[in-house]
Image (cartoon, rainbow, N blue to C red; front, side):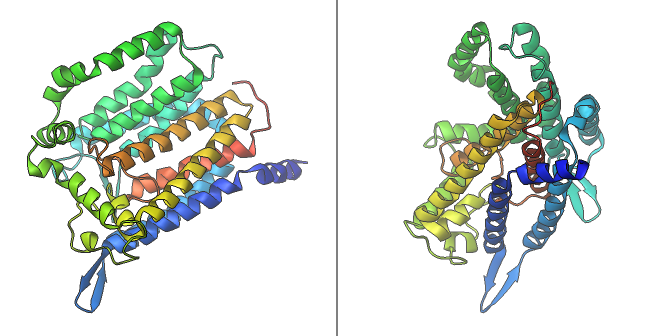
Length: 376
């Protein structure tokens, strides 16, 4: 009987999501290989980024299947301890972590580095989903602030590393989950007022507290003609690379902007610029179509689940991917400030790659049990 239930659950898994994930991961590896190749005469040398990412992808696939078969509903009781542990790791990193190029974001683990802020996203989503699943009505002010604090405290600690991009994503994920649950009209009105006043708040309250390079990036986005050349160099070079790809691109491994190293962070935050130069407008449209299908597949799983905790957790994962895709693409195209957010499955990054696969594993877990009703 148990075997029959498990077999039925396995058949119910969202295998389309698995296929889309593996296709995106394969594209990411191919793109990273191209971004890592440096032509020296007739020979080529491949940077260690590609080799490390292959290892991280393999680890990520194993983590995906582990998260897939571990019943996600057992994580409800672990939500608070996981968030506490995540906050403690951030505090330890802040006070005792190694300084790597002026930032404290990674914990060295032998040949690799672990980034605690990536794990924080999972713990924030779990506790947020647990709290949001307790009610069906739109959020009231009494519920709003305790749930907001779930992400606010870790986001402040991440901002101290400094990592503005991850701090923004943490709050955006939680905000998306609250919108999915629903908000009282009073909260929506206040939110609209905050958006209207946000330019003034950014100028008077936030900008003075940012680091010099962070202020330069925002200033470079708002007034590129007044910003120093260094502040807009990344954005300018990425747009030049994508524009030079035209309709069909220059061809795989033939991107000159990438090979001549004009594109900064071409293997991480600006990996899309490498892809756009080599595959052109057509390739970028195809890649964005894959991402849209990926998000649609996640939404289908959320819509069909009958478990409130699973639905809220799925919504958090949806917004985790949605915001990163939207902000990274906007950043590379010069439509948003450069805030250091990777493109899922395409950008290099070990911790983020493993977390991406864990998120997909949790979605598969939810999809396997989406026809099983259990009140949260």
